[in-house]
Length: 316
Ligand SMILES: Nc1nc2c(ncn2[C@@H]2O[C@H](COP(=O)(O)OP(=O)(O)OP(=O)(O)O)[C@@H](O)[C@H]2O)c(=O)[nH]1
Ligand SMILES: [Mg+2]
Ligand SMILES: [Zn+2]
Image (tube, rainbow, N blue to C red):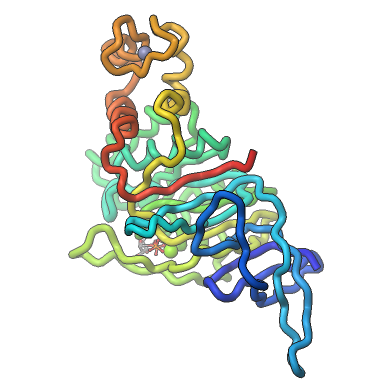
């Protein structure tokens, strides 16, 4: 039988078969996927082949094959093992949830996420959540960020997941697609899933006031079928985000507003740092490129703040 992985806890995989039934599957032996050293060889979103086998008087479902992936999102662990964990595969788009505080989301995090998604052609929509709690200054900041990212070409939506505000606009983007909600712990990913499909009643939790980063309420990525022809993968919060497997001279290409100008730089291998006659530096000085984006770029280039890595891959 063939099916799609909806949840994986490490030892069990919940697979939805083509006929719509759910099966709790095991894997057979060791799965090695070329080039990836991962703690979980199979992840949410994977298309798999599985068989029902008799063991004594029990029937067990066993995954025997994994189909080629369109793309995947993988996280590298901070510790020395450098092991990777695949969060989700075969995505049509990702929604990045952003909150100004409780928890704060910094532009460096947003930009790392966007660059990685650009590298593997996964569209990202930015969702500015918790719009119900911002004061006037924070509203100004949200407006500023939206203008900044919209100008570059990213769709931005202001929502209040808890209140259900502007949820219809999110729905419009989701119809007919498999999407994923990403963002720091506590930004409201599970709350948004609940707002889209009140019947699901996913666990959500208030952020502890002492640790403004929040605790992880969602512990495993899980996919849900929604009643309006959409599939959503809710994921555990991401703390940091580093870029993986990218050449120095390719990073700038994933900043669309840099890429547009790069042919005007004097040197065709310009890294937009201290080279003379750099079109990106000129645009920066003329306020045509944002300083926060440029700062993120330099950080990525110099590998600063790079101890926690995540990557969106595309099988080529
Ligand atoms: N005021 C307000 N609070 C919200 C909103 N959306 C979510 N929250 C609250 O934020 C807290 C965290 O929400 P969750 O949905 O659990 O966050 P999460 O992103 O799923 O977190 P993890 O599962 O840990 O990654 C909860 O107390 C929610 O009620 C919103 O639009 N406005
Ligand atoms: Mg959650
Ligand atoms: Zn340049």
